[in-house]
Length: 208
Image (cartoon, rainbow, N blue to C red; front, side, top):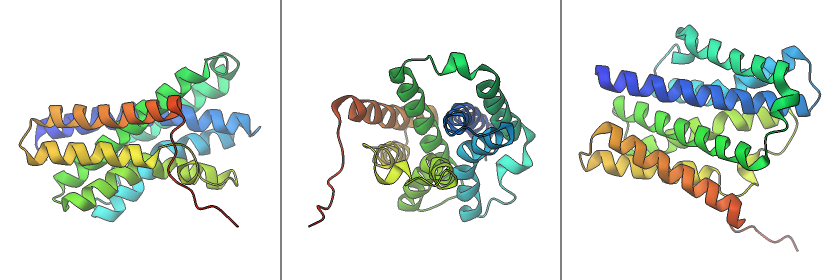
């Protein structure tokens, strides 16, 4: 990987890691878990998606286990929630949704970028970008014995997939890496936020 790709990937990955760690920590506090539970959910939400991506593309050991900055960022996010949750829980729901959408966009972009760097087929890169975005949240919900959000809530995985598609398309059109990443991230972010605002959902099978 060239230096520019490395720096872009690291910056996006760490920003998404912090946001998702805070989200995982909030879910743990809402479930009345102790400090260890908060840290485990912060770690899982923030890093499991990236770990799955790295294992699937053969980038082992996964970056989040080789570079201490990922784990430290996840635990910092969990600690922030544990010690400041009375204040964080007062943040309006709209702000939380916006931060969640930002984290989803950052991870979808990071996952797609890394898959492309490792010469994955564009279709596979889109899937890996989506997995990076939703994998941690899925594991978090499973640990909390809930049906994963990605299977039932609004436009979530679809937003990550749309952002990944835009990024891959921009890359194939030889757009600068930063422009491709911003374009894909913006599409994912806007689609997620607008879907919550407008109550968009994918069609569901009607049980008879």
